[in-house]
Amino acid sequence: MKIKIATVNDADTLLPFIRAYHEFEGIEASDMERTEAIAPLLGETPQFGRIWLIEEKNQAIGYIALCFGYSIEFGGRDAFLDEFYIAEPARGRGVGRRVLEEIKGEAAQFGVRAMHLEVAGANSAAKQFYSQLGFASREHFHLMSCELGAVPGDE
Image 1 (cartoon, rainbow, N blue to C red):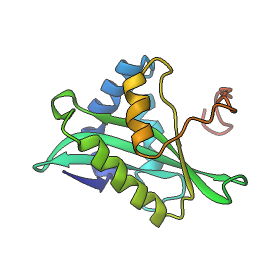
Image 2 (cartoon, one colour):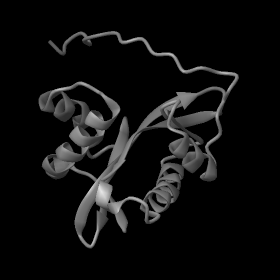
Image 3 (tube, rainbow, N blue to C red):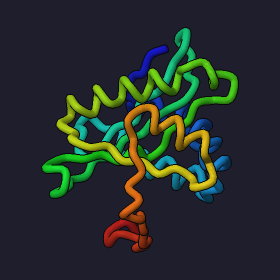
Image 4 (cartoon, rainbow, N blue to C red):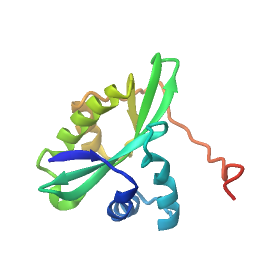
């Protein structure tokens, strides 16, 4: 198993995995919207974050996306593990654990001081998995989101 930073040349490889992840999570988006959303993460500079392809035997089996932010609380750059997907046949063999351990190292090289992620409240297996890898629920806080719509100039 290895991970490699995805480039614009990998967009067609990524898209079916992203579509499968979105179907699993009930996220509605067109392929065009998905393609536009990942474009800033496939560039040469890591300003917004990165996407890595997960490969086994030179075959893509999934992806993981990390998006950068900044936190006063954590004293610097933080990152949101935005999406993480491994194809069904590759699950249950420790690939996810190895990927997350590598991504922690990659994130540290980008100066990330804290990583965050969301997990479905009913997904107890995922919560246990992430807990074993050092992620802790912040029960005192509750993540809330507000969609703002189109960004000026994106029309």
